[in-house]
Length: 77
Image (cartoon, rainbow, N blue to C red; front, side, top):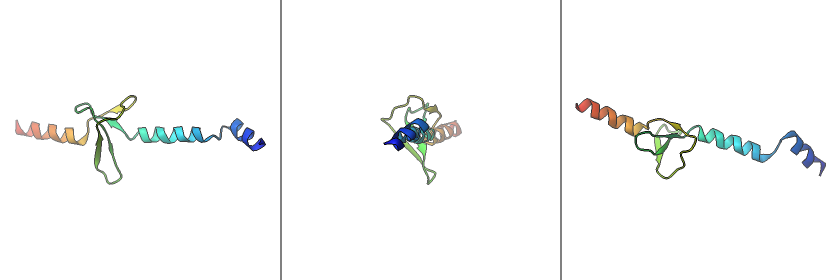
């Protein structure tokens, strides 16, 4: 039982490490300002968009699809 108390005093709790992992994961997510979808770039360098995803605290940045559409529309003019 002493080891539990000692680890708790040191701050070696699993919850602390889980919070860090979730923070790292949320740093990879962005909210598109044009289509309001949450998106990320995965390991294979493709853009994945999520429609029903919480956006609180995420960085606002246009996704690759909207940037590509905007470029195509600008080239047509």
